[in-house]
Image 1 (tube, rainbow, N blue to C red):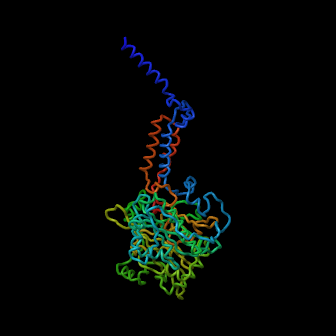
Image 2 (cartoon, helix red, strand yellow):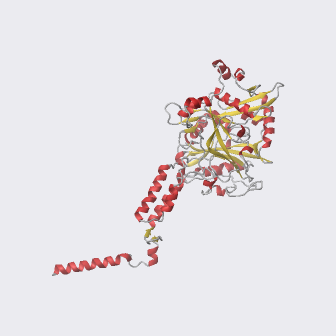
Length: 545
């Protein structure tokens, strides 16, 4: 019948289309077809793997890689790509160094014009003598600078502290380099340099210390940080200086030394409450407080102490201990430069620098000298003040930390000197006393009940090659706040945490399920075994174990 014939014809056409389907595209050649899909060899079968799926995996793997965060040790660093630092005059991570000297010769012709910023941003030299500008910098750093990995603590630099750190003798206005949004002039980036004479083994070099590199959190995908580094380098080069020293809490190419932070609890109850430290096994809070107890004083003595009188020192061990005064500058300079000759990386200070860095300033720097019976200064101790904001805590808003600075001894045992430093810091209301394991500090850290921190501080030299050195041969303690917070990391790494990592893993897993392939399982398992990195900003506060 006509209806039956029509049905038979449709059936034949349908079968014909099925036969033609594997070669759909008609006129396309085999090579053209191959360009649209990639075949993955597998043990039991050879399925086609669409290019789109491969691209999805590639993007997910890039996201996953970005989420790994900065390198915290040499092993992690060996797996990183340092696109920015590979262009700079610094040693490679795997380089074996036996010589001493500049990596690049001093430049005769230094670039005169500033480097280009991304569209919408502009350079600004910050005049910190202007109270409004200083407040802007204070706000930028306090909201965007170093936090610990768990986002519980953030450095809280006071404006007065910033002036002390950024305006030592020889400071230059153009070395306070800011970036603003062109439209509203909001400050969103900063980097600084200060002059210093540094002795590296047997060579004394005029160089700068780089510090306070900071980019607003919302702009860390704009690659502003590398431009900041290039620009401060250009400005320093214009003054005829071609070397620099800097520190970072992450591993970059290539550390000249690695130091460890240690912490001495002064207010155990508060440190436990804010989760800066925790109670160890079989320890109660009362036992912990007893363990860290220091000699106490009466309220009258405390009032005397606030007036910087000598009555307080009846609780300290060292005879002749008193606050440093301007008349002590010359003797302190002689003590410092003589004592520091034994170290491989050390500053060489003049009297003006000694006066700036050591003369006491309330809530900034404390220095106490030891004067013997003949009126000669024999020793001194010092520490600077750097509180941290306690984030998300109902009761405590600030953590007051003392950072060991320079402690020079010729007659007083260092152990006694540092014990007195702890007593003084406790009486002045500090919650914790921090110290690096540099110089001779290892001789007192455990004896005075310091606990080892959970991170390192790396020292770096820019445009200078020399063999590495041990932490006990380092004495450059100048305001060791890690500067490298946002450089040379994948764009997303600055805000990436474990939720982004999970997103990447989920995407890879989805592609595996959709394509029914096992070829990526080995890669996926390997990534699952890698620890997540909580830090996207480099430097960190180190908590007690």
